[in-house]
Image (cartoon, rainbow, N blue to C red; front, side, top):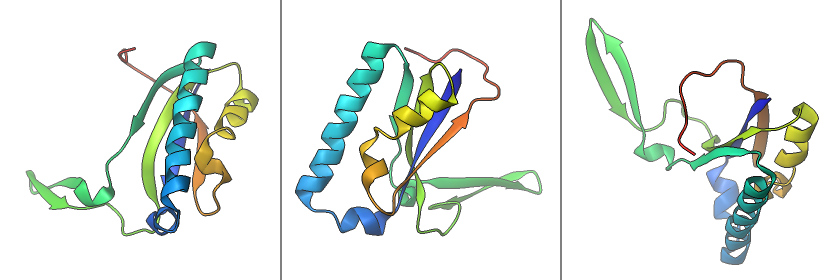
Length: 123
């Protein structure tokens, strides 16, 4: 079964962390990625740039309209994700609990089963 584990970031929470705490999060993700590779459960992982660097595209009167910045003004945003293939939802939740962000108050980890997929992701 495939699951998307998404990491929701609150910049205020991250800004309040020390450099050592931020480094520990990065190192924890590195260990988590290696463990997923070893278990064969990792399909891919991606980290996203800050939403201030995003572009929002809509079409009005047949013409694309592009605005800079995030789609929504919100205190939290999608920071990245892991796409995994594991036995069941319980295992996906078990894995999500190992992500360093899960231990930080104000950051969120969401687990959702993939309902449909098309195409091949590069390994």
